[in-house]
Amino acid sequence: MALDKTTTLQAAVASLQDGMTLGIGGWGPRRKPMALVREILRSSLRDLTVVSYGGPDVGMLCAAGRVRKLVFPFVTLDAIPLEPYYRRARESGVLEVMELDEGMFEWGLRAAGMRMSFLPTRVGLGSDVLARNPGLRTVTSPYDDGDVYVAMPALKLDAALLHVNEADQLGNTLLDGHDVYFDHLYARAATRTIVSCERLHAQLALDPARAQANRFERYLVSAVVHAPAGAHPTSFGPDYGWDMAHLKHYCASALAAEGWAAYRADFIDAGEAAYLDKCGGAVRIGRLPLPVF
Amino acid sequence: MSESTAITHAVTLAELMIVAASEAWRDNGELLASGITTIPRLGASLAKLTHSPELLMTDSEAYLVSEPVPLGPRGDYQPKIEGYLPFERVFECVWGGRRHAMIGPTQIDRWGQTNLSAVGDYAKPKSAVLGVRGLPGNSLCHANSFFVPNHGPRVFVSGEVDMVSGVGYNPARWQPGMRRDDIDLRLIVTDLCVMDFEGPGHAVRVRSLHPGVSFEQVQAATGFPLIAAPNLGTTPLPSAEQLAIIRRLDPHNLRGSVLRDNPPAVRQAAERAA
Image (cartoon, rainbow over all chains, first blue to last red; front, side):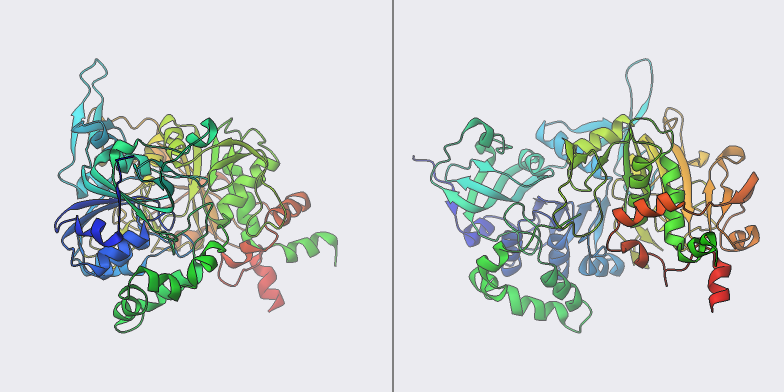
């Protein structure tokens, strides 16, 4: 097969540019493309607009000063409700924010995927989401009801970063886990989608039931990177759960003087292979139990 | 010691609040009951197992379950799955209105507006919390109740909340054509009392006081004026049956760590013991 979109973490991140708007898939501390995020931290990429249902992806990029603007409904680590590095950036006043309801955020991705300038919704009316985002406008129904809606603008992404369970060289993907959140909408909203995967195949050959785990078309995928344990320390069902000990260590680093520099030196700077070794290896990560809610 | 006294001594305030929370979902009909965090979740679970079996519930992840899932590590318990409700479908449920959620906001004001985003100046907040999450949509589209484990003026603020995440009954926030007829705020269950929005113009009203708590004490802990319900009573203690269900649903006693020092339901009982 001639089509081969496989590449390396380094090459995938090298294709991104300063100032880009990046959508990061997953949800809080679940299904985050952390190997790609770590590779961004190893690069010089900066002035990013990050669009995310935020977890440690947002926290780490904030800690490293790479985020100019954050488009988000929340940032949390679930069992650790408050993300320390997001909080520090937010409370310092340096972070430009577009804070949205979770559903408005979905609507923005959908609008971008449908090549619409906006989608109407009642959600946001009466709240400070409108007051704090003066760029958001309302629209009046052209029908007899005359209802007023928020015109949720398209959240167009220069690139989407996703981590999937399986992929092939052509860009076909399989997303497992109990809930795969809104990854398909990020892919549709983005000019280019970079996918990292647990397992890489030459070409997927599926039975009909298995094919239902394919949530978006391969023409949306520009690059495929093989990155086992690439969602660590977030949870990635059914392959592994979140690494709560690691997340606690990461959060504790925010309390120490030069804590981020130490975390970065300990885990990130030496590369992804060293990261996995430092975290006990893919075998240990593969044994991390899925979270119980 | 009589049996009733023994129960009184054993019952915790958290358990009384679970029973009070469960009342939020009585006679709601067939809709999704979402109790977020330990006490609201146990309240919804208790409602489904007692007075309101028609409620829909999830395993707090992605599946609809026919029986509430116990909290914490489950051993060999297998959730009894009857359907699928990932977040994408939760949003569809929200917009359709067939849901009653109970959450714990950081701030609540006299109009029922809530804040989960940031405390202080928005540009440079004193405390960044989670973000507005789904509150703007939830509050506009379906029934909502609130849970407050630390009733005080920092939660029940005197003016408006610092960042209106969940909307409420403040007329100044609505312009012509903005429909707000689906706003439906029900109960506020706190560690002092149960309140509702059934005063004049949806004013916050104290519905029942927890044992040993006075109306004046609640008013002093609230940043805006409260109304006492005409039939203001005492929040009922859990029955033996309710307690047995709560203990089965929460085998690891996660409810025991929600409130500071896990106080007893009847405050005088604690003072006598001390």
